Amino acid sequence: MAATRAGTAPVVALHFGDGVLHAIDQTELPWRERQLELRTAAEVADAIKRLAIRGAPLIGVAAAYGVALELARDPAPTSLSRAAETLRTARPTAVNLSAAVDRVERAVQAVGESDAGDAALTEARAIEAEEQAASAAIATHGAELLAGARRILTHCNTGALAAPGRGTALAVIAELAARGSLDAAIATESRPLLQGARLTVYELSRLGIPHELVVDSAAPGLIAAGAVDAVIVGCDRVAANGDVANKVGTYGLALAARAAAIPFVVAGPTSTIDLATPTGAEITIEERDPDEVRLIAGRSLTLPGTPTRNPAFDVTPAELVSALVTEDGVLRPPLASGR
Ligand code: MRU
Image 1 (spheres, protein in one colour):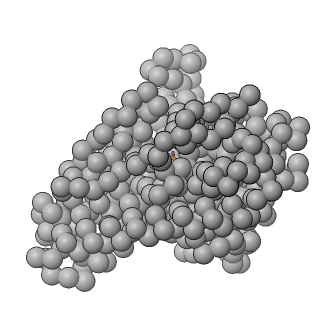
Image 2: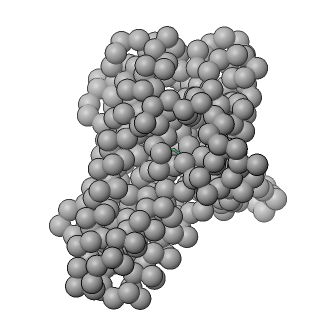
Image 3: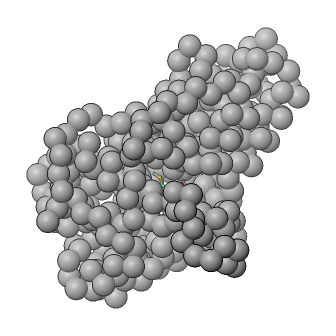
């Protein structure tokens, strides 16, 4: 039975005001909505590393503001290069992070030192506004594409906590719910950090969208049994050939969707497409702390010191992707010949 709760406005994951970047600490959701106040590039980078701020478009926007925060304190070129490096290397997989930092860096380099802080802030605000507009367009294009799908499965968290505006894949689900054509969203837990169980359920609940939570390993069986009409996920980097890096577990969902002949749709802004990376094989997959797998809420799930792999993402080949929904419309992979 799908769970619902009275709807409220979408959550606002971060906002810049009074010279401070305010951000919800997503590691504490859904239990507590605690606001962080970030004042330096190092503080923003730390929040990104520990996933207090997460989701490809959102970390790009946060990093852009991180550069602006630093230049407001010290507008010297050395301050710019130090801040840019600290933020660019906070996480490796989502291209939005390095792309946003590079963009702010170029905007600052085009003006004199006295205008550096203003130029950085203007560029950060522009990136945020573009991502907000992209989110709205993705919701519309995606809802038109999936108009006939009543039960939609999604992975990780791709809503307002992951991207400015309403998010990406979850924005499509929210739009279908608003249009009255969705029976239920099915959210995977998204082990090990439970972005689905903690964040997607939190957002769906706030929005009053009917939903069910499943363990990751239940998803392929439910797809095979005909309980899912379509799968929609976000993306962290789309290579030039259309291969998609996204939260670990995405590839298995794509295989299950292909076997069941249902659409496997990826939603993301064009800022997540990286034409400089030819194929998924060249995408760096972040390996995170093994204790994220060994522990849950600080308690051990296994024997201490158990050898563990913890890749945070995987790559889905373009041929398994039915459609890529961007703000420019629906693209059909492969995007270009990357090989
Ligand atoms: O490790 P996370 O939580 O940052 O991973 C996020 C994802 O994999 C999302 O699917 C992706 O960033 C798209 S967000 C709109």
